[in-house]
Amino acid sequence: MRKILLVEDDKYLIDIYATELKKAGFVVKVALNGKEALNKINKIKPDLLLLDIIMPKVDGWQVLRKIKEKAEFKNLKVIVLSNLSQKEDIEKAQKFGVTKYFIKTHFAPSNVVQEIKKILK
Image (cartoon, rainbow, N blue to C red; front, side, top):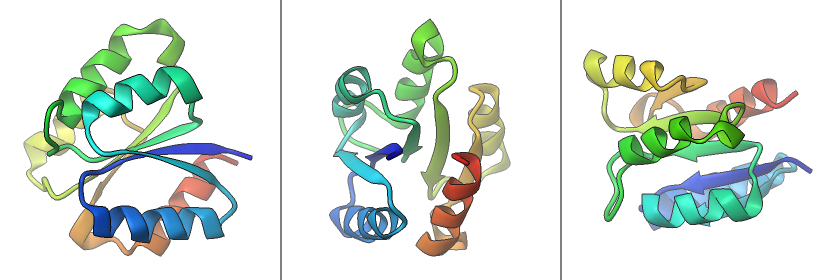
């Protein structure tokens, strides 16, 4: 089974996305902030990271920076799921090599899960 690390600080969204992803057959692990995410990435070696940007302690930009620095995460697929919708934010994420960038308010969780299925085929 494919493993997804969901990095999100909103418990309501965690519940929705975790439920949808589990229904689609994925193993889902959760990190409530970037610091926790960086610890869990090393331990669980996820196939995909579903990453929020605005979080406490360590934000998503810092997580992306750390991932870029480590060769073992070179092939880790990252989908940003954020409320940041400015062109500059999307371009910044693309410079980090993210696979996809979804604006939370523009996509239903089911759409995001469908995209994840395509990416992890």
